[in-house]
Image (cartoon, rainbow, N blue to C red; front, top):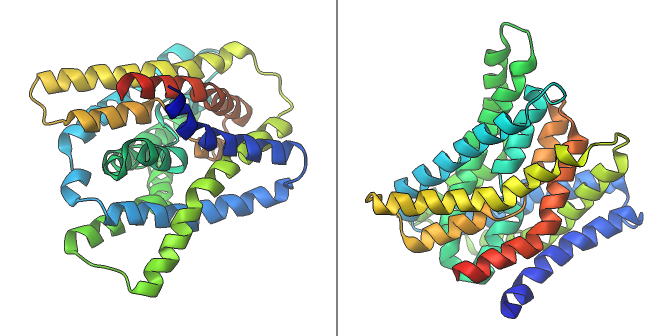
Length: 317
């Protein structure tokens, strides 16, 4: 267990550093969007491209893995909306709460952390989950969040917004380009490859630091008092129910003959055990949901995940 904590501690410590820097005013709030831009549009796409290019295409097109993870994501979304939607929490807030319960922080935290724990072969299954969450889970929850509107064209507008969000997101494109490079056996010119490598190496530390800063900013800017029952249960659903569901569904799929490798199942269970994705807070703000509630779910899941994720690693490896 100590050896696992020695690997996981630095990742969560970087989140804490970003949080404290923002809370203490060492990092101005005006600088946080710049860090976000660097991570989302430069460093993280380069890291995902590099993983995609170094991962066999067959691993990225694992149908059994996609089916298991996608089914669990859909169940998580449906269950979370069912148990949280009420007179105070409408479709908009319930849908983004469901997204934060089903969407792990795989891009910023999961890929580098799992590679450090399990080796480079863990990147392939982790990247598959990113594609599912970006293309399907996020789009579905954005569409569901529009159901509060009485506009007869709400579904059409939601679909357009979802497609636009996917098209403008650089992460799926980076994975796709990496997969194409892997499949076609293409390699970038040496100087370009070194530039991509430098940006990719910066992705993990800057992203983790930025997560902490974003969480601190959301907490500092929130003036609304939100009951614990509105966010703590969702954080626990994310950290406990999600990995249990993925593990049980995965084992059931293997028993039914679905071609899912045990190692890949271990990876996606650990992905599900990660804290909630911090970019959901940005989406919630953009679509008018209660971002204070979403930020609290992300914060609680990130704090508790240091213990729950480490325990999951100890059990599965």
